[in-house]
Length: 472
Ligand SMILES: Cc1cc2nc3c(=O)[nH]c(=O)nc-3n(C[C@H](O)[C@H](O)[C@H](O)COP(=O)(O)OP(=O)(O)OC[C@H]3O[C@@H](n4cnc5c(N)ncnc54)[C@H](O)[C@@H]3O)c2cc1C
Image (cartoon, rainbow, N blue to C red; front, side):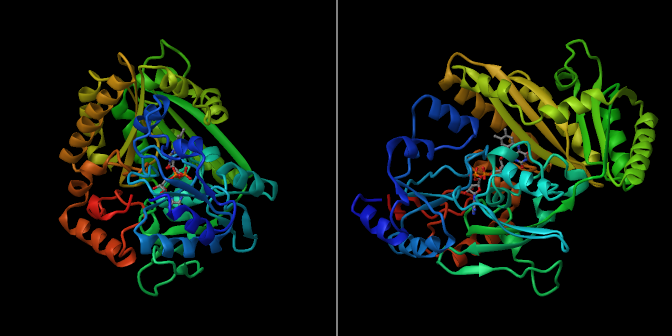
């Protein structure tokens, strides 16, 4: 974007909205993908935007997008920047549209159990406001204090209690979206409809390439009257997976189902000599139902070799689940390596994927694994990679090796290459193979129809126009 555009842009969005302070530009050149975070820590900003536009009102967005489309200036939406794949990194520069000041609850409907919220609201602020009135979102990602409803929608996020409440796709009732061509679309706000395709799904997982989400209506739930948790020990990963499969097969909906492999179990149990695999299990809701569900789920665990260890380890996890300080300090340490890779597969194939990933990645880093989102037909697998290299440049090279090995194994097994973090930059090289030619064509055609100038988050989801056509 040429400097001559800045005064024009300021006129379009209004005074005090365009930020060109170099430190802010540096911050907005990154998200929390470890590769990007390492670049930030090294003072390298290969994708620095030319300006940050921090809007405070939805009405500022349409004229800005029309202006950007006319001048072919890239616009990358950003919620709170907690993404871990590089999706909010402005790879072609231009404008970062910072939505963090578009915050606050618009409407709480206690009869219909919905909340309408501006897209940039901090997750924990929203959850705390709901709790004061006796409700919860049910959506409880580990990044709740770091992320926003707009980001949840754009990444197809999921909370840690998804086995009871579902992923964000189960919780979104309606959206307001500004299209790249500047029109504001308020999707119907109904409990369910068979009136054509459900268009909200077009924007769920679109990673900011198809529109700017400005308002989200979400389902909410009364705070549970009762909660009960239990930790168990299984002899190995395979028996724990079988117990989880039978819990979902029985139609149970515990809010917490979390199985750790042997290596992560020692950390989860806070016991370096713990032998076996820990499973944390929890039920909540109406007391009688939650207690009955827990009894039935525990019976299921016993059948597959699960031994009860008491509630304390699972309660400790609940109390500390937002604390990522150990991983953060390893990341900040020069040469410290941290990465997370989450994938998914059917029950029949997930153990093979786990075993192959563990074998292939162990020479490259320490590999901790857990299974924490369950469905009647399959489960997620979440790997935490930790290690050390000579310096941060060596870490980046190692991370490339890790991503390549992990994604190739997932593709070989026909597994989902991401369960909930999304594609961003991290998985872009594998997107076409993961989707297949047909779905890739649909994605490109939808992008071309909604964003003919190709300015919204270009370089993401494989819907990019040639680099040379985008104004820098
Ligand atoms: C410690 C930690 C724990 C995490 N735990 C979880 C977890 O439990 N579950 C989970 O799903 N994820 C988790 N994440 C990942 C991350 O928090 C999610 O991807 C989250 O949804 C991103 O929200 P955000 O507001 O920070 O979005 P950003 O990172 O700012 O943006 C992410 C993507 O969404 C787009 N976007 C953002 N806002 C909008 C908008 N209003 N309109 C259109 N596009 C938009 C951006 O362009 C980008 O493509 C975790 C991350 C960290 C660092």
